[in-house]
Length: 406
Image 1 (cartoon, rainbow, N blue to C red):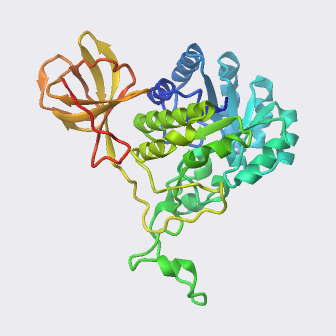
Image 2: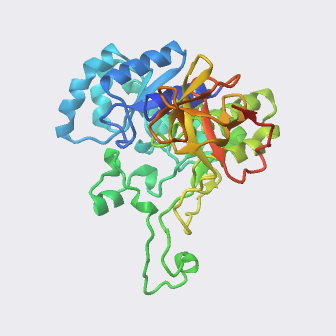
Protein backbone atom coordinates (compact mmCIF):
# COMPACT_ATOMS: atom_id res chain seq x y z
CA UNK A 1 0.00 0.00 0.00
CA UNK A 2 1.22 3.50 -0.80
CA UNK A 3 2.48 5.53 2.18
CA UNK A 4 0.63 8.63 3.43
CA UNK A 5 3.18 11.23 4.61
CA UNK A 6 1.93 14.21 6.63
CA UNK A 7 3.53 17.46 7.86
CA UNK A 8 4.61 17.91 11.48
CA UNK A 9 5.58 21.52 12.12
CA UNK A 10 5.70 20.88 15.86
CA UNK A 11 5.08 18.05 18.32
CA UNK A 12 1.32 18.60 18.60
CA UNK A 13 0.95 18.60 14.80
CA UNK A 14 2.95 15.37 14.70
CA UNK A 15 0.61 13.76 17.22
CA UNK A 16 -2.43 15.04 15.32
CA UNK A 17 -1.22 13.71 11.98
CA UNK A 18 -0.55 10.26 13.44
CA UNK A 19 -3.90 10.29 15.24
CA UNK A 20 -5.71 11.02 11.97
CA UNK A 21 -4.04 8.23 10.03
CA UNK A 22 -0.60 9.21 8.71
CA UNK A 23 1.80 6.35 7.99
CA UNK A 24 4.75 8.71 8.37
CA UNK A 25 5.47 12.32 9.30
CA UNK A 26 8.22 14.75 8.35
CA UNK A 27 9.59 17.43 10.63
CA UNK A 28 12.60 19.66 11.18
CA UNK A 29 15.18 20.52 13.80
CA UNK A 30 15.50 24.22 14.65
CA UNK A 31 18.14 24.53 11.92
CA UNK A 32 18.76 23.16 8.41
CA UNK A 33 15.11 22.86 7.30
CA UNK A 34 13.15 24.91 4.77
CA UNK A 35 10.39 26.02 7.15
CA UNK A 36 12.26 28.15 9.67
CA UNK A 37 9.03 29.79 10.85
CA UNK A 38 7.29 26.52 11.65
CA UNK A 39 7.38 25.53 15.32
CA UNK A 40 10.08 22.93 14.59
CA UNK A 41 11.80 20.84 17.25
CA UNK A 42 14.49 21.36 19.87
CA UNK A 43 16.92 18.49 20.45
CA UNK A 44 14.86 17.32 23.44
CA UNK A 45 11.58 17.51 21.49
CA UNK A 46 13.09 15.76 18.49
CA UNK A 47 14.31 12.87 20.63
CA UNK A 48 10.84 12.56 22.18
CA UNK A 49 9.18 12.82 18.76
CA UNK A 50 11.33 10.01 17.33
CA UNK A 51 10.50 7.81 20.32
CA UNK A 52 6.78 8.70 20.13
CA UNK A 53 6.57 7.93 16.42
CA UNK A 54 8.37 4.61 16.70
CA UNK A 55 6.16 3.59 19.63
CA UNK A 56 3.14 4.29 17.41
CA UNK A 57 4.72 2.02 14.74
CA UNK A 58 4.92 4.95 12.31
CA UNK A 59 7.90 6.52 10.54
CA UNK A 60 9.52 9.90 11.00
CA UNK A 61 11.65 11.72 8.41
CA UNK A 62 13.85 14.67 9.37
CA UNK A 63 14.26 17.53 6.89
CA UNK A 64 17.81 18.82 6.47
CA UNK A 65 17.03 20.29 3.07
CA UNK A 66 18.33 23.84 3.41
CA UNK A 67 21.15 24.97 1.10
CA UNK A 68 24.22 25.67 3.25
CA UNK A 69 27.38 27.76 2.99
CA UNK A 70 30.75 26.68 4.35
CA UNK A 71 30.16 28.70 7.53
CA UNK A 72 27.06 26.57 8.28
CA UNK A 73 28.77 23.19 8.33
CA UNK A 74 30.35 23.49 11.78
CA UNK A 75 26.88 23.55 13.31
CA UNK A 76 25.74 20.63 11.15
CA UNK A 77 28.80 18.58 12.14
CA UNK A 78 27.97 19.23 15.80
CA UNK A 79 24.48 17.83 15.12
CA UNK A 80 25.77 14.49 13.79
CA UNK A 81 26.32 12.75 17.18
CA UNK A 82 22.68 13.37 18.04
CA UNK A 83 21.56 11.83 14.74
CA UNK A 84 23.72 8.76 15.27
CA UNK A 85 22.28 8.24 18.75
CA UNK A 86 18.69 9.11 17.79
CA UNK A 87 18.28 8.06 14.17
CA UNK A 88 15.03 8.97 12.41
CA UNK A 89 13.80 6.65 9.67
CA UNK A 90 15.31 8.89 6.99
CA UNK A 91 16.90 12.28 6.36
CA UNK A 92 15.50 14.60 3.68
CA UNK A 93 18.36 16.36 1.86
CA UNK A 94 18.83 18.81 -1.01
CA UNK A 95 22.41 20.05 -0.77
CA UNK A 96 25.18 17.78 -2.15
CA UNK A 97 27.54 18.96 0.57
CA UNK A 98 25.03 17.98 3.24
CA UNK A 99 24.55 14.64 1.46
CA UNK A 100 28.28 13.97 1.59
CA UNK A 101 28.55 14.82 5.29
CA UNK A 102 25.59 12.63 6.26
CA UNK A 103 27.10 9.49 4.73
CA UNK A 104 28.78 8.64 8.02
CA UNK A 105 25.44 8.46 9.87
CA UNK A 106 24.32 5.43 7.78
CA UNK A 107 20.75 6.79 7.98
CA UNK A 108 18.73 6.36 4.75
CA UNK A 109 18.55 9.49 2.60
CA UNK A 110 15.53 10.92 0.80
CA UNK A 111 16.39 13.54 -1.83
CA UNK A 112 14.17 16.61 -1.42
CA UNK A 113 11.93 18.06 -4.11
CA UNK A 114 14.12 21.16 -3.75
CA UNK A 115 16.85 19.25 -5.58
CA UNK A 116 14.48 19.24 -8.62
CA UNK A 117 15.14 15.66 -9.69
CA UNK A 118 13.11 15.29 -12.88
CA UNK A 119 14.50 12.06 -14.35
CA UNK A 120 15.52 8.52 -13.48
CA UNK A 121 19.11 9.07 -14.65
CA UNK A 122 19.73 11.53 -11.82
CA UNK A 123 17.92 9.22 -9.41
CA UNK A 124 20.00 6.20 -10.34
CA UNK A 125 23.23 8.18 -10.04
CA UNK A 126 22.33 8.98 -6.42
CA UNK A 127 22.02 5.31 -5.38
CA UNK A 128 25.71 5.24 -4.46
CA UNK A 129 25.15 7.82 -1.69
CA UNK A 130 22.83 5.82 0.61
CA UNK A 131 19.80 7.35 -1.14
CA UNK A 132 16.63 5.25 -0.88
CA UNK A 133 13.99 7.67 -2.10
CA UNK A 134 13.55 10.56 -4.52
CA UNK A 135 10.92 13.21 -3.77
CA UNK A 136 10.05 14.03 -7.35
CA UNK A 137 10.17 17.57 -8.69
CA UNK A 138 6.68 19.06 -8.72
CA UNK A 139 6.98 19.88 -12.42
CA UNK A 140 6.44 16.25 -13.48
CA UNK A 141 3.22 15.24 -15.24
CA UNK A 142 1.51 11.92 -14.63
CA UNK A 143 3.12 10.42 -17.73
CA UNK A 144 6.56 11.79 -16.71
CA UNK A 145 6.07 10.26 -13.28
CA UNK A 146 5.14 6.83 -14.65
CA UNK A 147 8.29 6.71 -16.81
CA UNK A 148 10.43 7.93 -13.90
CA UNK A 149 9.13 5.22 -11.56
CA UNK A 150 9.51 2.49 -14.18
CA UNK A 151 13.17 3.36 -14.80
CA UNK A 152 14.49 3.45 -11.24
CA UNK A 153 14.57 0.97 -8.37
CA UNK A 154 14.51 3.82 -5.84
CA UNK A 155 11.27 4.70 -4.09
CA UNK A 156 9.55 7.78 -5.52
CA UNK A 157 7.55 10.20 -3.39
CA UNK A 158 5.25 12.88 -4.75
CA UNK A 159 3.40 15.88 -3.30
CA UNK A 160 -0.37 15.57 -3.63
CA UNK A 161 -1.66 18.48 -1.53
CA UNK A 162 -0.70 21.94 -0.31
CA UNK A 163 0.76 25.26 -1.37
CA UNK A 164 2.52 25.53 -4.72
CA UNK A 165 5.47 27.79 -5.55
CA UNK A 166 5.81 29.78 -8.77
CA UNK A 167 9.59 29.18 -8.83
CA UNK A 168 11.16 26.09 -10.36
CA UNK A 169 11.13 23.45 -7.61
CA UNK A 170 10.98 26.23 -5.07
CA UNK A 171 14.29 27.84 -6.03
CA UNK A 172 13.29 31.47 -5.65
CA UNK A 173 15.16 34.72 -4.99
CA UNK A 174 12.25 37.18 -4.90
CA UNK A 175 11.88 36.97 -1.12
CA UNK A 176 15.62 37.41 -0.52
CA UNK A 177 15.78 40.37 -2.89
CA UNK A 178 12.73 42.22 -1.55
CA UNK A 179 12.84 41.37 2.17
CA UNK A 180 16.29 39.88 2.86
CA UNK A 181 14.54 36.64 3.89
CA UNK A 182 15.97 33.72 1.92
CA UNK A 183 13.54 31.09 0.63
CA UNK A 184 16.49 28.74 0.16
CA UNK A 185 17.28 29.08 3.86
CA UNK A 186 13.71 28.34 4.88
CA UNK A 187 12.62 31.91 5.59
CA UNK A 188 10.45 32.78 2.58
CA UNK A 189 8.29 35.91 2.94
CA UNK A 190 5.99 34.63 0.14
CA UNK A 191 6.59 37.74 -1.95
CA UNK A 192 5.04 35.85 -4.87
CA UNK A 193 1.67 36.23 -3.11
CA UNK A 194 1.83 40.04 -3.21
CA UNK A 195 -0.11 42.21 -5.63
CA UNK A 196 1.87 43.67 -8.54
CA UNK A 197 1.29 46.16 -11.33
CA UNK A 198 3.22 45.22 -14.47
CA UNK A 199 4.12 47.44 -17.42
CA UNK A 200 5.37 46.12 -20.77
CA UNK A 201 5.52 48.57 -23.68
CA UNK A 202 5.53 46.34 -26.76
CA UNK A 203 3.41 43.27 -25.98
CA UNK A 204 0.06 44.73 -25.00
CA UNK A 205 -1.76 41.44 -25.65
CA UNK A 206 0.04 39.49 -22.94
CA UNK A 207 -2.46 37.50 -20.78
CA UNK A 208 -1.56 39.57 -17.72
CA UNK A 209 -3.18 42.65 -19.26
CA UNK A 210 -6.38 40.77 -19.95
CA UNK A 211 -6.78 39.70 -16.33
CA UNK A 212 -5.18 42.55 -14.45
CA UNK A 213 -7.49 44.64 -12.30
CA UNK A 214 -7.09 48.38 -12.05
CA UNK A 215 -5.40 47.94 -8.68
CA UNK A 216 -2.97 45.33 -10.01
CA UNK A 217 -2.62 41.56 -10.40
CA UNK A 218 -1.29 38.60 -8.44
CA UNK A 219 0.79 37.48 -11.41
CA UNK A 220 3.13 35.24 -9.35
CA UNK A 221 0.42 33.68 -7.16
CA UNK A 222 -0.11 29.93 -7.54
CA UNK A 223 -3.20 27.86 -6.94
CA UNK A 224 -2.93 25.35 -4.10
CA UNK A 225 -2.45 21.73 -5.11
CA UNK A 226 -5.20 19.18 -4.48
CA UNK A 227 -4.60 15.96 -6.40
CA UNK A 228 -7.35 13.98 -4.69
CA UNK A 229 -9.57 13.88 -7.85
CA UNK A 230 -6.82 11.94 -9.68
CA UNK A 231 -5.31 10.10 -6.71
CA UNK A 232 -6.08 6.73 -8.28
CA UNK A 233 -4.05 7.66 -11.36
CA UNK A 234 -1.15 8.86 -9.23
CA UNK A 235 -1.08 5.64 -7.21
CA UNK A 236 -1.12 3.65 -10.44
CA UNK A 237 2.14 5.29 -11.59
CA UNK A 238 3.84 3.15 -8.92
CA UNK A 239 4.94 5.89 -6.51
CA UNK A 240 5.59 4.71 -2.95
CA UNK A 241 4.60 7.80 -0.94
CA UNK A 242 1.97 10.55 -1.17
CA UNK A 243 3.00 13.74 0.63
CA UNK A 244 0.96 16.58 2.11
CA UNK A 245 2.63 20.01 2.27
CA UNK A 246 2.02 22.26 5.26
CA UNK A 247 4.38 22.28 8.23
CA UNK A 248 3.46 25.94 8.80
CA UNK A 249 -0.26 25.12 8.84
CA UNK A 250 -2.39 24.34 11.92
CA UNK A 251 -3.19 21.07 13.67
CA UNK A 252 -6.63 21.32 12.09
CA UNK A 253 -5.06 21.39 8.62
CA UNK A 254 -2.77 18.46 9.45
CA UNK A 255 -5.65 16.43 10.87
CA UNK A 256 -8.29 17.15 8.24
CA UNK A 257 -6.02 16.68 5.21
CA UNK A 258 -4.57 13.49 6.67
CA UNK A 259 -8.05 12.15 7.41
CA UNK A 260 -9.25 12.90 3.87
CA UNK A 261 -6.28 11.32 2.08
CA UNK A 262 -6.30 8.36 4.48
CA UNK A 263 -9.89 7.61 3.48
CA UNK A 264 -9.08 8.17 -0.21
CA UNK A 265 -6.13 5.77 -0.14
CA UNK A 266 -8.00 3.11 1.81
CA UNK A 267 -11.04 3.36 -0.46
CA UNK A 268 -8.79 3.04 -3.53
CA UNK A 269 -7.52 -0.34 -2.35
CA UNK A 270 -11.05 -1.35 -1.35
CA UNK A 271 -12.35 -0.47 -4.82
CA UNK A 272 -14.65 2.30 -3.56
CA UNK A 273 -12.54 5.39 -4.35
CA UNK A 274 -15.02 6.81 -6.90
CA UNK A 275 -17.80 6.55 -4.32
CA UNK A 276 -16.06 8.79 -1.82
CA UNK A 277 -13.93 11.10 -3.98
CA UNK A 278 -16.44 13.95 -4.39
CA UNK A 279 -17.35 14.14 -0.71
CA UNK A 280 -13.69 13.97 0.35
CA UNK A 281 -12.84 16.79 -2.06
CA UNK A 282 -15.57 18.93 -0.49
CA UNK A 283 -14.19 18.06 2.93
CA UNK A 284 -10.76 19.34 1.89
CA UNK A 285 -12.36 22.69 1.10
CA UNK A 286 -13.07 23.16 4.80
CA UNK A 287 -9.40 23.81 5.62
CA UNK A 288 -7.85 27.21 4.99
CA UNK A 289 -6.71 27.14 1.36
CA UNK A 290 -6.35 29.02 -1.89
CA UNK A 291 -8.39 27.76 -4.87
CA UNK A 292 -7.33 24.23 -5.78
CA UNK A 293 -5.74 22.91 -8.96
CA UNK A 294 -4.10 19.66 -10.11
CA UNK A 295 -0.67 21.28 -10.27
CA UNK A 296 1.51 19.93 -13.09
CA UNK A 297 0.00 16.44 -13.12
CA UNK A 298 -2.08 17.04 -16.25
CA UNK A 299 0.16 19.70 -17.79
CA UNK A 300 1.27 23.25 -17.05
CA UNK A 301 -0.92 24.90 -14.39
CA UNK A 302 -2.18 28.47 -14.53
CA UNK A 303 -1.41 31.10 -11.93
CA UNK A 304 -4.29 32.47 -9.82
CA UNK A 305 -4.25 36.16 -10.71
CA UNK A 306 -7.24 37.52 -8.81
CA UNK A 307 -6.18 37.23 -5.18
CA UNK A 308 -3.77 35.52 -2.80
CA UNK A 309 -6.29 35.44 0.06
CA UNK A 310 -7.14 32.18 1.78
CA UNK A 311 -10.62 30.68 1.69
CA UNK A 312 -11.61 29.94 5.30
CA UNK A 313 -15.04 28.28 5.53
CA UNK A 314 -14.31 26.86 8.99
CA UNK A 315 -12.55 28.09 12.12
CA UNK A 316 -10.27 25.85 14.15
CA UNK A 317 -11.51 26.39 17.70
CA UNK A 318 -9.58 23.97 19.95
CA UNK A 319 -7.81 20.65 20.22
CA UNK A 320 -8.49 17.99 22.84
CA UNK A 321 -5.48 17.49 25.11
CA UNK A 322 -6.97 14.73 27.24
CA UNK A 323 -10.05 13.40 28.97
CA UNK A 324 -10.18 14.34 32.68
CA UNK A 325 -12.95 12.56 34.56
CA UNK A 326 -16.23 13.69 33.07
CA UNK A 327 -14.65 16.58 31.16
CA UNK A 328 -12.53 17.22 28.08
CA UNK A 329 -9.44 19.37 28.48
CA UNK A 330 -9.00 21.72 25.50
CA UNK A 331 -6.23 23.98 24.25
CA UNK A 332 -7.99 26.99 22.73
CA UNK A 333 -6.85 28.10 19.28
CA UNK A 334 -9.48 30.74 18.46
CA UNK A 335 -11.85 32.70 20.67
CA UNK A 336 -15.17 30.99 21.34
CA UNK A 337 -18.15 31.08 23.67
CA UNK A 338 -21.20 28.89 24.17
CA UNK A 339 -22.79 27.76 20.90
CA UNK A 340 -22.87 25.12 18.18
CA UNK A 341 -19.66 23.34 17.15
CA UNK A 342 -18.38 20.16 15.58
CA UNK A 343 -15.78 17.67 16.72
CA UNK A 344 -13.65 16.19 13.94
CA UNK A 345 -12.31 12.71 14.71
CA UNK A 346 -10.42 10.22 12.53
CA UNK A 347 -13.60 8.30 11.74
CA UNK A 348 -16.58 10.62 12.10
CA UNK A 349 -17.72 14.14 12.95
CA UNK A 350 -19.88 14.92 15.98
CA UNK A 351 -22.09 18.02 16.28
CA UNK A 352 -22.32 19.50 19.78
CA UNK A 353 -23.98 22.44 21.51
CA UNK A 354 -21.62 23.68 24.22
CA UNK A 355 -23.57 25.33 27.04
CA UNK A 356 -20.84 25.54 29.68
CA UNK A 357 -17.14 26.38 29.54
CA UNK A 358 -14.90 25.85 32.59
CA UNK A 359 -11.61 27.58 33.41
CA UNK A 360 -8.57 25.59 34.53
CA UNK A 361 -9.80 25.86 38.16
CA UNK A 362 -13.25 24.64 37.00
CA UNK A 363 -14.89 28.02 37.55
CA UNK A 364 -17.34 29.06 34.83
CA UNK A 365 -16.11 31.10 31.87
CA UNK A 366 -18.13 33.12 29.40
CA UNK A 367 -15.42 33.32 26.73
CA UNK A 368 -12.42 31.14 25.94
CA UNK A 369 -9.39 32.92 24.44
CA UNK A 370 -6.50 31.63 22.28
CA UNK A 371 -3.77 29.92 24.29
CA UNK A 372 -5.99 29.19 27.28
CA UNK A 373 -6.67 25.76 28.75
CA UNK A 374 -10.39 25.21 29.29
CA UNK A 375 -12.72 22.31 29.99
CA UNK A 376 -16.09 21.26 28.63
CA UNK A 377 -18.35 18.37 29.52
CA UNK A 378 -17.25 15.08 28.04
CA UNK A 379 -18.71 13.58 24.86
CA UNK A 380 -18.73 9.88 23.99
CA UNK A 381 -16.18 8.78 21.38
CA UNK A 382 -14.23 12.06 21.57
CA UNK A 383 -10.61 11.52 22.47
CA UNK A 384 -7.17 13.07 22.77
CA UNK A 385 -6.05 14.96 19.63
CA UNK A 386 -9.59 15.27 18.24
CA UNK A 387 -10.40 18.75 16.94
CA UNK A 388 -13.20 21.23 17.70
CA UNK A 389 -14.26 23.56 14.89
CA UNK A 390 -17.10 25.77 13.73
CA UNK A 391 -18.15 25.96 10.06
CA UNK A 392 -20.06 28.68 8.28
CA UNK A 393 -22.59 27.97 5.53
CA UNK A 394 -21.33 24.42 5.19
CA UNK A 395 -20.71 22.78 1.82
CA UNK A 396 -22.88 19.95 0.50
CA UNK A 397 -20.63 17.27 2.02
CA UNK A 398 -21.51 18.37 5.57
CA UNK A 399 -24.78 16.77 6.69
CA UNK A 400 -26.50 18.42 9.64
CA UNK A 401 -27.14 15.94 12.46
CA UNK A 402 -28.81 16.18 15.82
CA UNK A 403 -26.31 18.01 18.04
CA UNK A 404 -25.28 16.69 21.44
CA UNK A 405 -25.84 19.27 24.16
CA UNK A 406 -23.04 19.52 26.71
